Amino acid sequence: MKDAVLYTRVSSREQEQEGFSLGAQSKLLREYAVKNDVRIVETFEDVETAKMAGRKQFSEMVKFLERNPSCRAVLVEKTDRLYRNFRDAVTLEDLDVEIHLVKENQVISKDSKSQSRLMHGIHVVLARSYSENLREEVKKGQRAKAETGIFPGHPPFGYRNNKAERTIEVHPENAVIVNRVFSSYATGTFSLVQLSKHIQKETGKKISKTNLDKMLKNPFYSGYFVWSGTTYKGTHECIIHPVLAARVNDVINDVRKPKYGKAEIAFRGLMKCAHDDCTVTGEFKKGKYVYYRCSGSRGKCQLPRFREEEIAKRLGEPLKNIHVPEEVVTRIVNALKSDGERNRHEVEEQRSRLQQRLSAIRRRIDGAYTDKLDGKISEELWQRKSQEWNAEEQQIQMALNGLNYADAGNRVMNAQRVLELANKAYLLYETPNSTEKAKLLKTVLWNCSIDAVSVMPAYRKPFDMIFERAKTEAWSGREDLNLRPPGPEL
Image 1 (tube, rainbow, N blue to C red):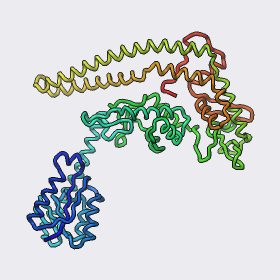
Image 2: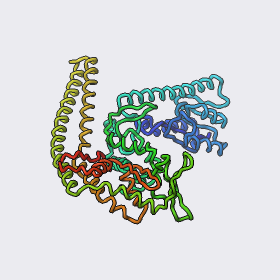
Image 3: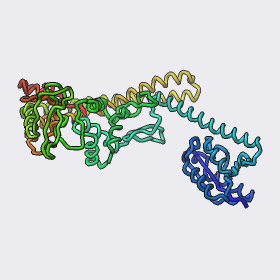
Image 4: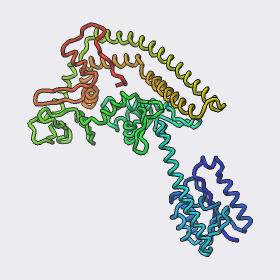
């Protein structure tokens, strides 16, 4: 009786479910073994493509044959189940084993006739050609899918595939985390390492620095995606509003962002030299004192060195200049609440109108499709009209998605938070912790230019507008002060 190993393979679990069962292959091969007096001593099965070398169980089978010289036969359904590449074919040939191709009714070994070996070689070439052609067709299909605005791959964190409808939908829990990532980073107060810790503390979700970087740079969240080097407008729902995405992009590309080193130097990255516009950097002296100086990248500079305590005192001065009178804060918040109530009614009315239009369009599409099936309208007319209706449906859906960001309540809350922070900024700054001081400064300021005696701040929005109002005392007492809260959450 001859000893042999049994090898079965499918390309994917989905392929197995569609009828290319590993069990069916195994049954066929075992029946063959019984009829031909072959004893199966080991079985191997793979669920992966055979177009490339390196399959796990195939490699294990090769090792088994190398260790067991008494076993010199492999039972397999047909050539393309065993391999679709020349390297694996040569590997088995070098082992000097018999390959029993049951469905092809062939046994290939070193003693096979030249014609049999030729036919087997042709089968290998055809199997490889099939794999290559399939790859080209898949790429062609994926490109065609991308051109219609549908992402051809697995969506990023925050989304999920709806297998029943073959669409991409928002993951309700993970989308909230994505929003927190973007809104937190947009403040400009976090490095990626700090952001990772912050998100884990807030949501319990641990996201690495590398994955955060990919997430923040991924246009998918604001409605676009890149496929094979080309950017497409997607039909999927946006998680991140384009305004917030633009703010995050500004923070990523901001050359004034601090460069985070191993040592924690609180005010590093917040200042530039007024003499030559170079970065003001910090460094430890004697292991415990922190001094700040011009980096001198444009040559020797006359800016003196400063102790951290002196810098902290000077940087706190700009916070005194963004005070808003309490009565003005009250009037602005009350006015925004009143406007917000009107806006909510307008948004609900607009949403109702859009949903009615969307329902009408979908009924029209369904009715026309039924007419096409009944032969009442031609294929050409159906294609032309369905494209028009689908485009209109997409526009209405985008308009509905846009209404999701028209949240007047959040705008009032954000405005109140900004105004309260403006009034309490200097009081909060009196903390003895330099790191906390720097965090507050990074919320309010983009950067500061300093010389030997002065600090010239550059305020972030909307604190720049508050500063201008406070500087001129232009609090008119009217409710239309044009103080607009920031869009996305700070």
